[in-house]
Length: 116
Image (cartoon, rainbow, N blue to C red):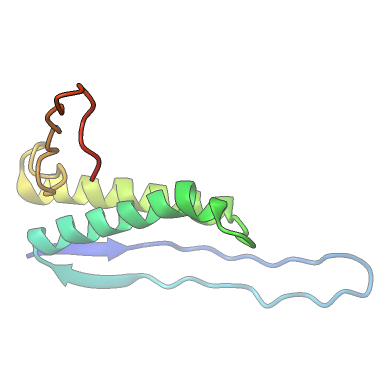
């Protein structure tokens, strides 16, 4: 089993102007989970897919409000998960996505590929 350690730590407080109340500081705690290499690869793929959705699909939805900081944090997390998968496997290739290989569409008689 690969040990995965999420270690986002930080402390923040803000004050928005005269008379505004101070927000309580946010303290993030370290969390440890144990997953198999296969589970780690699945988690990495699902996280990457969700980030793609948030970056390219969700902004086209009415009322969507972007959170660039969260998107950046998610991308950093995916990179860390991929790095952990490479370390756990001992091979740089094993951390590649476990998705089915991309199928190339054959051309119709008119030379245009079929749509899926």
